[in-house]
Amino acid sequence: MGSTCRQAWKANFTLDCPFHPFYTYGSVRKSKVVSHINIPTSTKCYFDWCDENFVVPNELAFKKDICKKAFKRVGVTVGVLAKQNTHLLEALKEEIMSIGNT
Image (cartoon, rainbow, N blue to C red):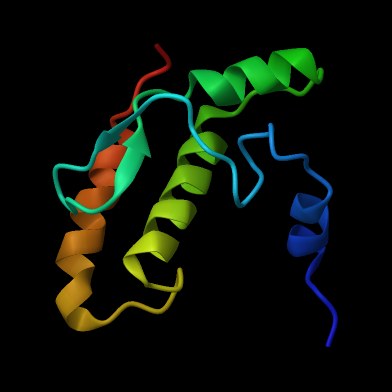
């Protein structure tokens, strides 16, 4: 079994790229919804990376990437939600979607 195009694409990013699965955000805060999860304070690192690499920025894509990483840390595979986790994950998603660019 091979990896998907998305996995192969992400595997080519260096650790200093916010899209890398193991990227460490410079400025984080504890989530108000899930206390053992840290989320970035802004999407600025994504915008900076895009500027440096001549990529057109897409803030929604940045926040989706943050959601995927946060959901993975919670222990949920994106797309496979238990009924008891749905409310919690929706609240976490709303919190992440409210992150600004500064």
